[in-house]
Image (cartoon, rainbow, N blue to C red):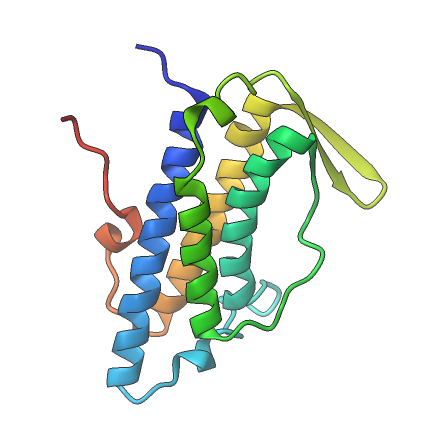
Length: 173
């Protein structure tokens, strides 16, 4: 059985966005129970030269929803703004992205493997096929930022484990 671009992109985005939503909620509950306002976490960084938790969550959304949009438009650019979302707004942002992607159909994605997608950053353009853009750029970035957000919460004491990161796995029916 062949695997489709939809299977490797949308299915993975939705699974991980569900996990991110879950670990955001679990962490918020933990921090509130221990007298910490979750909003204190949005500016936390793993290392001084890394971008903060807020950005990591925004990038998870950007590298999923906007990446799929790039298959249609042919262009992907870095996010043009980074709103100062609080923790609850970040949670809502992830849930909205998950809901958006759950509406995407296989017909909207499959067949886009060979389209040209240009990643435009400043004066530079990186040219990809749709499949290479998703597999070698979008998904690695998406998982990097999801993992970094998880790691920030974990480093601050959130009781998270691998199952919290993995989300709902897709079992054989």
